[in-house]
Amino acid sequence: MKFNKEFDELSKHSRETAIECGWSYLSSYHFLIGILKFDNVPNKIFKNKNWEFEQLSKLLIREKNEAVKGNYYLTKEIETSIKNAKYYSWIYGDTEVKPEHLVFAMLADKKSDAGKYLNSVGMDYAEFKSAYKNIKKLNANNFLESIGKSNLAIQIGIPRLINKLIKNVA
Image (cartoon, rainbow, N blue to C red; front, side, top):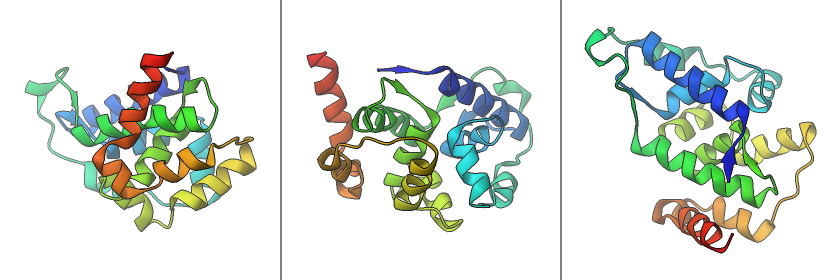
């Protein structure tokens, strides 16, 4: 499964956000702010629902450390969310991983910082999915989606395991 151009643009904006905010790594928070910096489906949903990200922006500001410039890495949390985004792409019948799949992955992982933040502003998996269905047609594999929404399944890595199985079969 490959990432589409929007996801590549999201990665670029997330890195820029980390640099602007003085962080030495990329977290799920940077990806949320990155989503807000260009036109994409999750951004449209966030705007339509009037979800506020002002507090998140305040959380991200740190003193800049020029020594780490260019040496950015992904936290384990966002790395897991990106891997799980491939799973959501697959269960929703897409051939490419898009920013909205990352948001589904963040919302499904109840322990992730981004998932917690999104829940605090009033967004949950079901509401995001409902808003997504209003913008795009959604053909979900209900059984696989139920696995993907289970916090226990997320924590023990079942979506990642299924991704590996799919990759080996394809």
